[in-house]
Image 1 (cartoon, rainbow, N blue to C red):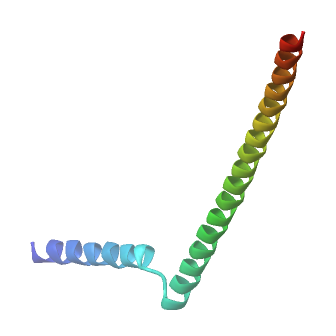
Image 2 (cartoon, one colour; image 1 turned 180 degrees about the vertical axis):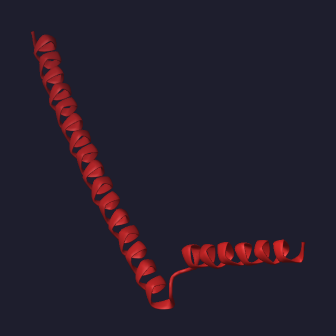
Length: 88
């Protein structure tokens, strides 16, 4: 019976060591490189989103300017027509 327990113990120890090697954290250098890559990816994402947002805002501003200009022109034309009607 003690021989069987020892075999189970050795089997469990082997599985534990194999698992430790498979799921061990990266070395300090590898971890730093991984973190720098992730930080760079995050910075790139933020930069791309900022460019998208800037372009969207510029587009909205341009549309707003066009709407104001179109409305002002229509109002000026209506005012001139109103004056013409009043004159006669």
